[in-house]
Amino acid sequence: MQTFNAKKVKNQVVQWIRDWFEENGPGCNAVIGISGGKDSSVVAALCAEALGTDRVIGVTMPNKVQPDIDDSMKLINHLGIRHCCVNIGDTFNAIEAAVSEQLKTLGQEISTQTIQNLPPRLRMTTLYAVSQSMNGRVANTCNLSEDWVGYSTRYGDAAGDFSPLGGLTVQEVKAIGKELGLPIELVEKTPSDGLCGKSDEDNLGFTYAVLDRYIRTGECDDPATKARIDDKHRKNLFKLLPIPHFEY
Image (cartoon, rainbow, N blue to C red):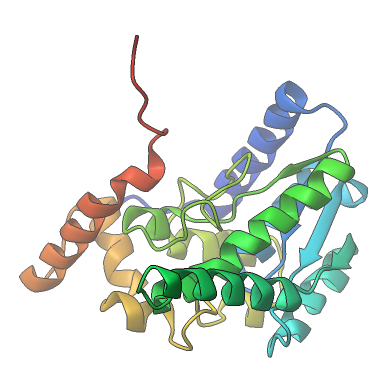
């Protein structure tokens, strides 16, 4: 497998961000949901280098209490970017209660998956509310590895106006994070969706290292894992495609 040149790719992504904004929003701000994990940290740092810290706005969005909110603030303070905090807890409670009540009239209980995917969708709504009022463009912070197996919430964290990490695997994102000089504890933080209390790799049933190797080389030592990855990739491709529409 070809050696990944983190410095070269970092510079390429920075230039890509500059070019994208020049074409799609000259003078606009980059608005980023800051979770305290590696992806949002790397995206924020890339945007800060590309546009200047004065054009990057970080938004923290705890659902009542966020146990790792200190990690989010560590990144914000490290970069010196503007930020705001919008707690989605009350909104989440209100929508969950209203939907649950109405589903019962249809003889149905609200599903666990519905509850788990509601916060990411509320957060994306929040980001667009901030962005629209701040002359902004919303950053998508998903990476290639997550997108490959559909490990994202459609119209939640899978949304956005531009995606700096969409062509980079987890291992490559980490390498760029180190090249950017981000706090190592943020770059190497165990990835979690923050929804169900498990790590990403627990939920997926395989490691990102295995997935990344398969994406880049087509090699996977365990046939069962290969089949699992292929199945997830096939089933979740729709998340990356435009909405199907009738051609008249």
